[in-house]
Image 1 (cartoon, rainbow, N blue to C red):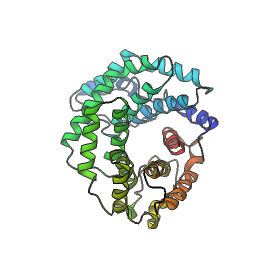
Image 2: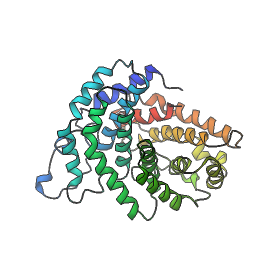
Image 3: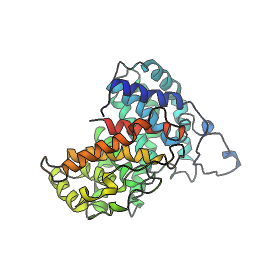
Length: 334
């Protein structure tokens, strides 16, 4: 149940195939007038593949992540060609124009925002000689998304706890990592203060009601993931014990979700749920004391969740194949 060069090769092959695949495509598109009736690639000349915009974004993230961890990746040259083809100043300016159009500030908010900032971070972390060039090309889009996220937090009066793209904590966790990596004090402070205000007093989260039938992230565990990054270790352990006081007894959270039809785009979300739960649990464990009462139960749950869905990633139907490898990467990383 570990990340290996072989698995990274298999994971990378998936976005390499799908990032140039324009159809089928799930468009989330607001038309301001008839001139906005466009193909996916016309609207998004960079992030048009992988079924939807956010999956294309984290498909590129996955390729960089695989390459950073395994520089000898056999697909390295193909990855370079793909980035050279897509990450140009002209194409990125057109991507940014989409967000500048009227009535589009909410497009991909907040899930796509978080992944776009994570992609920028991965570009900055990359040792690839052309990564700085690719990152510079994306700068206008990154700056726009960063501003939109800050504006969003000002108006977001309540956290969104659903286990799908609108979940607040998931996007903030990715965005907080980005803010800290680039020393963006304004963004970091905004996320930390918002999280403390809206999650800091949460207790006895009703995790027994999870999962929903189309969820790919756990509302309970994703919030815990974020707060493990926001709070000091001692403060987090106290908060966590009040937030999920009997976590080992919550069977619905400790055991993997059943995926009845991996070819159904919504039902296939549950494979992602199993993998993202493992990622969240791993992160939470790193911030709990060694002797914490729930540690052994959480460790066992991690292995169950990975085992339930890891073999469904490579070779899966396009419903899951266009995105699951990114979540598998998160689940398998130490």
